[in-house]
Image (cartoon, rainbow, N blue to C red):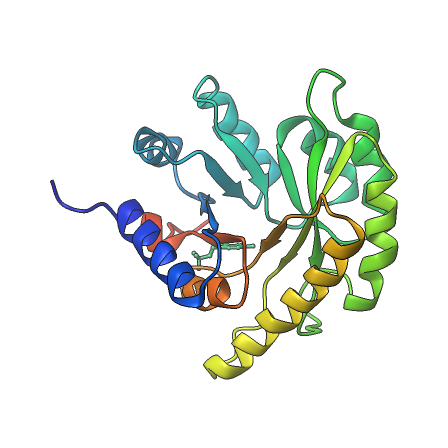
Length: 225
Ligand SMILES: *Cc1c(COP(=O)(O)O)cnc(C)c1O
C-alpha cells in the first residue's frame, strides 16, 4: 500500500520531535474549504482532530459527520455574536484573544458537555493584519479564562508572520515557547502550544510546539472559498 499523506506527515512530525528530544506533538488536520468527504477519508485512517476557520462551515460539516467521534477546533477569528454557536459546536476554541469573548463562551457552554478547551491567540509578530492579543495581555486573559468553570485553559496559539528567513520564523516560535512556559508555571493545566503549519511544522516542533495545524500538506491545495 502506498504511504498516505497522513502517514507521511506523522512520520515527519515524529522525526522532528525525536531530533529535538521533545515529546510527540498532536496533529490538527485543518479542513477549511475541504468537503466532509475529505474529512471522513482522513477519519477512516485514524485522524480525530480537525480545525475549521468558519463557524457556519464547521456547523455543516460537523452535522454531516456526527457519529464519527471527531474533535472540532475553531482556529479562525471568532466574532462575539457567534460565541454562543461556537461554545456549543466546538471542543476547542484556539482563537480567544480578548476579554469580551470569555463570559459568553462560558455562559453558552452546554452543561452536559465537558468544559470548552481554550487557547489564547497571541499576535506574536505584532502584525496589524492579524488577530490575537499582545504578549503583555496574556496574563490577564489567562486569569479571566481560568476563572470560568465552564472553560478549560489549555494554552496558547499563534500564527507567526511568514518571514522569508527561516531564522526569523524560528525566533517567533521561540518567543511563543517562552510565553507558554511562563503560563504553564502558573497554570499547570496549560499543556498545549499550537503553532506550525504545512510549511514549517517541523521547525515549530523543534522549538516546542505541542500541536501543529496542517492543511495543504495533508489535503492538497484548497479549493477557493
Ligand atoms: C489555514 C490555516 C492553517 C493551515 O495552513 P496550511 O498552510 O494549509 O497548513 C493553520 N492554522 C490556521 C489558523 C489556518 O487558518
